[in-house]
Image (tube, rainbow, N blue to C red; front, side, top):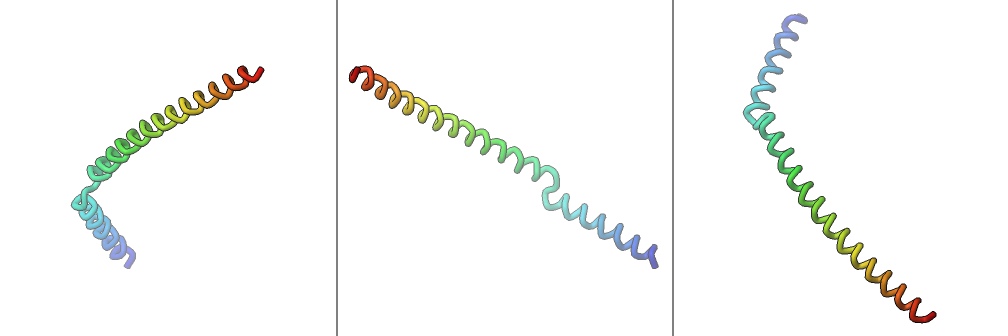
Amino acid sequence: MTVLALIISIIALVIAVLAYQKAGGIRDLQEQAEALRFVADNLREKTADALDKLEKSLRKSEEKKEAAEKGKK
């Protein structure tokens, strides 16, 4: 009886592997990973640009504040 269960489980495993390959398999996962890398790189660049703009804006504000304080003295 256990031999029959083993044979059925092996057949089920083979069918699962064939279905996985037919559905796209590893290639599909690699394509999705590449697409995610592309999106992450774009997001990283946009974040860096936004932080750069924010830094420039803050530095201008600080410079104006310092100039106003020097003018008061």
